[in-house]
Every structure is written in C-alpha cells, then in structure tokens.
Length: 199
Length: 311
Image (tube, rainbow over all chains, first blue to last red; front, side, top):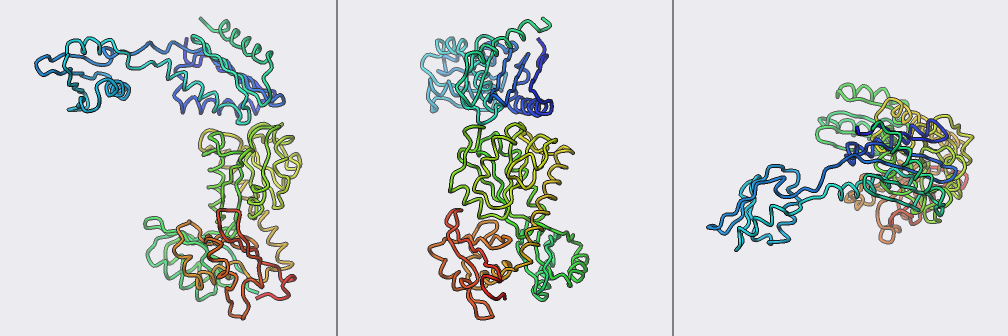
C-alpha cells in the first residue's frame, strides 16, 4: 500500500471540504503521520454536528530490540557492558530503559555512540539487553493517531468514539450523544476503504 | 481644534531623537516607541498642517513614514477558546496583522466558546470585550455554524463586531449581528502566508480601519472633553511609576479612552487627580474604573456635551 493512496474528504459544501482537507494535511504533516497512513476517508456533517473518519494504516514496522539498533558486548574483566549505537533515533528510549534498570550512576556515555554500563554480571546482562525491547512504534503511532484525530476534529465535538484494531482506525466525534448508526456508518466507510484499495 | 493624523515611522535608531524633539515642538504625540536592535518603530500623532515637516525629517534620516489608520485603537481578537485548534493559527496571525497599521490587539479566548449548541460566553467575558473599541471574532470553516449557531456569542457585545471565517461566499448580512464579515480566514493549521490568505488579511485591515474611521466621524460630531493622547502625556509626566511598567504598551490608547496598566487600588486616586494646565482634573472629564483586564485602570473620557466644555 502506498502512503495516502486514498485521501477522501466529503462534505455537503465543496469549499468546506477543501478547508478540512488542508487542515488534515497540515496536521498529518506536523505529527509526521503521512507515511504511516495508507487510506483515509473523512465525512463532515456540520448540520448534524458530526465528524467521521476511517483510516487504514500501512505496515509501520515491528518492535525494536537493542540488537536492532546497537552492538552489545560483555566485558567481564572490567565488569562492564559496552553498547555501541548504530541507529541514533532510539537513544532516548534506550537510555530511559537503562536508567530504570541500572540507575544513572552506573551508566556513562564516553561519546555519543557509546554507552557503558557497570554491572556485576556482564555476561548475563549483555544477553538480556540484546533481547530487550527498546521501542514499539505501534504504541507511539496510537498516541499520534488519537492526537491527530482530536486536532482535526472541530473543537466543540467533544463526544468521541474511537476504535484501533490491527491496521484499522475509526473515529467518530460529535457535540451530541453519539448515535449507533453514526458509528456503523463509519464502519461501512472503513469497509469501503479496505475493499476499494488497489491491493 | 488641531487635527492629529496617525503615522508610523520605521528607521534606524541613529538620530531618531530628533524626530521625538520635533514632535514635542509641533505639539504632536509619540504613542509608542519600539526599539528592536538598531531599528526603531515610532507610532505618532502628527498635527495635520505639519506633516510635511515630519516627512522631510524622516526622509533625511532615511526612514519610512507610513499612515497608520488604526493607531489609538484597541482591538479584542476573540477566539472561541485558547485550544490548539485556533492558536497560533489563525487567531495569532490575525492579531499580528492588525498591529501593522498601528492597532493594539488583545487576544481573548472564551472559556466555553467552542461548539454549536454548547457555545456560550460569560458576563465577565462580555464586559471585558466591551472595554475595547472593536471586537474581531475568529470563527471556523462551516457556514452553517457562522450563520446559525455562533452569532449567539454576540449577545451583550455593544462595540462593533467583525467576524472572520472560512466561507468566501458569505455576505456580512448573512451573519446576524455582525458589522463586517471577512471570508477566507477560517480554521487553518498553518501560518497564513498564501496570496489569498494575505489578501483576506489585507481586507480585514481595510475593513477594520473603515469601522474605526466611522467611529471617529461619529465622535467628531460630539468631541471628547480631552484627547486620549493628551491624557497619556499627562500620565507620563505626573505618574512616574508608569515608566517602570514592563508591559509592551503601559498606556494603551482607545478611541474614547485609555487603559493604564497600573494596579487600580494603588494608583486610581493619583489618576483621578491628574491635573491639566487649564485647571481641571481628570475625574471631571472621564469615568475612571477598575478594568476587567487584570487589575488595571480603565479611563473612559466623557464627551463635550456631558462635561459642558472641552480642553
């Protein structure tokens, strides 16, 4: 699936449709979500105070473990584990986890590519660290998606329904109590998106 | 009575003191002086017959002298709430653009202004908005909301109301209660910088300037007992504490008054007893009250017909 291969915004008045398309584009850009979204459809019905959105996500990668982003080496003589970073983008998450496990006092960073951990059992710890999960892009994606949905929705629509399952995301928002049929309509939109793709 | 015209001077800091001295000699007023690095912006009121002198001097100083029709106008830019849906774009962009022609703008976010059925404004908010000269309401992109639901926020607003929104095809008369509607400035999540957006902002400035000049014309029929700019100058001379206020505009001019950014309890007596050369004090010429904005002092100058004389 290409990113944003389907991007549909529907509203009764054409100019309003364009305004919302622009708002959605801007918010996707500022949350860096565009590469993660395959197909998106938004329906606006201001007269009913209703906003519906269905999204099919692209494959966003799997969990990242330490071995994916760094080389881990045990140094029994020095009672140390050396981590040589290969991909810098996950350093904040990695350091967070390391601080939690070993304490800040036991961790030093001689340079930006190296993290040294002082420990009594270097061999076992190195084996553990290799398999440790550093980051889960799906978790971050979920946070961003919800943030995106709230930013794109008109502000007064505070009654919200959202569903996030696998690569499917449905969001319905309104000012009034949500009707079951609105959620069902969003479900139909999602189904159309699933079938209407090129794959 | 001398007719004063508002102008904005932009130029280098070097020798700009000459301009301030000239203004003192001519009997004009410096409303605001902003020094940024080596550049200075002076907002001034210049006596009509002496404009040429000032133009000549500003040309000598290699500065630019522009008309600033919104000088001495305090505008409330009212957004439904202060949530990220409206800020910084478009509400801040609108407020910033209105400052180009010399206006002082205050941004007001209503506590519960969002939504269609649920939007409302509080008494306190309405009073705060009414302290200004003109209110600019920044609405969204749905014409249904702008024409049918949002106008209830105008209830109790006594000053002229300007509305901005997305739909271009709406007319002013479609928005009940509004004095002017400007399209193409709806809800956006990016900085307003495309041609049609800047055009819309220019339209807004033009429309607001027109409303301000209408208010001035109405006022000319029954002039104020004293010019707000003159009160400003007297406060600067007689209340030295004003020079230690860090707000960008410690004395904010309005079309019919002035906002003094000093605490009310401590300073209101001093302001009330402000003396003019003619032997009158300010409390004879104006109503002085506690502003709804923080704890400031609000001076609303009475008209000549109320007081019986003008100075």
